[in-house]
Image 1 (cartoon, helix red, strand yellow):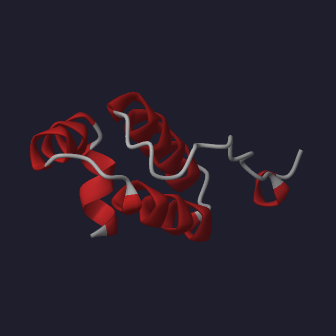
Image 2 (cartoon, helix red, strand yellow):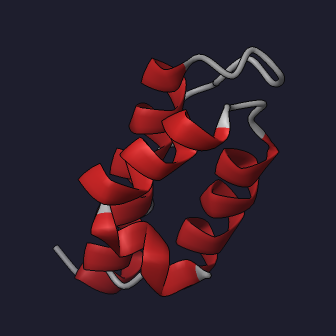
Image 3 (cartoon, one colour):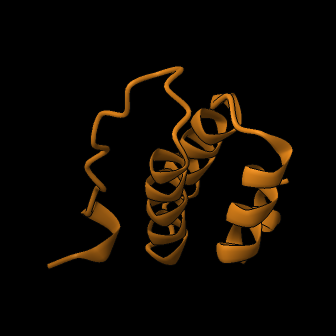
Length: 73
């Protein structure tokens, strides 16, 4: 299988619900996309992550758990 042709399915996340577990799921998908070299997918998912209505405390905690998010800033 050619890794360049692999796509990452993006599971639906209800927009605007902003639950921390949804943010963690997006962060994990971002990490996977970057590991697979799918930078555009990671960027699109990061935009969705930024749009979640999280408190600053929740956002910092998730950034700490997923250091890869800081590479997308």
